Structure formats: C-alpha cells, structure tokens
Length: 113
View 1: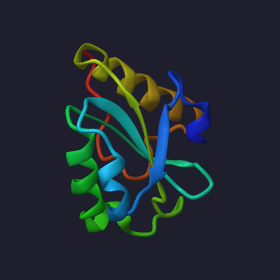
View 2: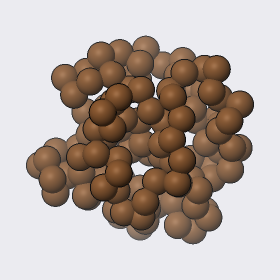
View 3: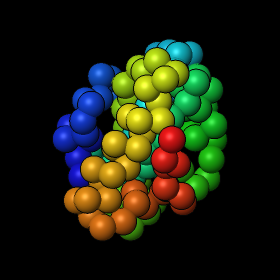
View 4: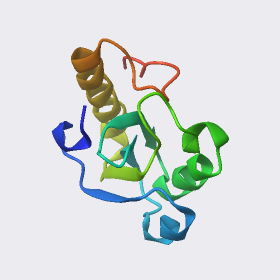
C-alpha cells in the first residue's frame, strides 16, 4: 500500500536520514516509514515525532533492507493526543485489508481503544 492512499492523509514526508531530523516537529502525530516508491513498511504513533524519528533512524531494524524495500521516507500527520490511536489503527487496518498482514516492520497490531 502506498502512503498516498492512507486515510486520513499524510501531511508531510521527509527523507529518512539523520540530516532531516531538524525538520521533524516535536509534536504528536502518526507516521509511516516507506520505501522510495512510497510503499508502507511501518506504521506508528508518537507524542514527539522528532524523538521517534531519531529512535528509528538509529535502529538497525528500521534502516535494514526488508522484503518490501528499505525505509526511505518518514511520512507523518500531526494529530492531537486523542486522535493518535484511532489514526494509527486506521492506517494499520487499511494496510492489513490490502495485504492480509501487518507492514513488514511492525511486530504487533495497534491496540483497540
């Protein structure tokens, strides 16, 4: 599934490289790691997107080549805290409906709250 198809829509995407960290806001939001072609590899949420970007870019698992490609984009949507779980869950379900599985870098599904 391409990040362009996620609903609610992605608001911004940046290259998943440390030099772009300063452009990621320290705000809450949902995000996806995607391949160069925009294929979703991971879906997550955070109360601080900047911190989470840093944690992922430093994680060998998140920067490694996968069967679906290598993370090239960090794409996100700013969300109020009360919308985080619902937005992440929607994106996970959209991906699972399209592919019958979670994104390759997600280990567990989003909780139902």
